[in-house]
Image 1 (tube, rainbow, N blue to C red):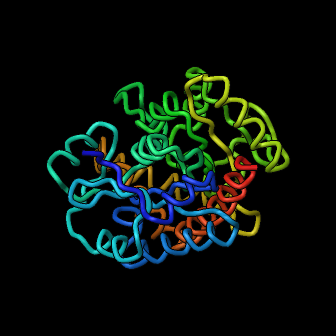
Image 2 (image 1 turned 135 degrees about the vertical axis):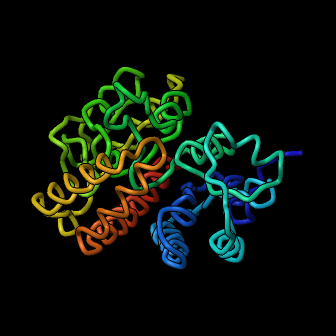
Length: 301
């Protein structure tokens, strides 16, 4: 049995060579509280439709990987308790045991590629964690990018990560980082991390041409599209740096490690900035969805 089931809208778009943009669902089940996650997911779908593409929000219901959840299915996923956060390592188990799961960046990339979808819009990718020399903690998002040929539109890597090591990892594994109207690698809440991208591209058409050639050459890796948060939504540097330093010190003081660290840091950043990190996150998500749709349309021309 085929574990992937596309929605009617997605199946029709793919059959006719139309533009489709994949969206993940960990944002819905783990990233934002209910019903904020659901509302955000629906808003991202609307943004993609308004720019001429078909959204394919990917999630797992009873072991079936849906490529394009309906509104009712998305609401069910958002309201279900104990949804499994699905990655490359447990995707097969979740499907085989007929569980309900949300897809991470890595799992969404895999499902998108398996169904012929070339563009995926998200917030920020995972990367190399701080203290990796002691923990070896590297996100499977980077592994997915190294071996799944999908274009990922994002605002860089999550700000709580070791960004210099993350950028070095991307280069080492042959993952091109293309900056849309920027020469700097974004730092999620901030437009620049002080690091450089591989190449700057100033138009959607130029971006589509570079991605199309990369995919056609059969290089095997994905492409990271670095799309900075809009200027008006960027967090002030002092607010961002103070909150991050405080949250990191608190995490160390509590002796947190592994999977405990990221949710703790994100929750503390939200509290320390009075919710400004969440507002910035929503703004960059919408921006990435719009760019993802424009890119998908350009790739279909």
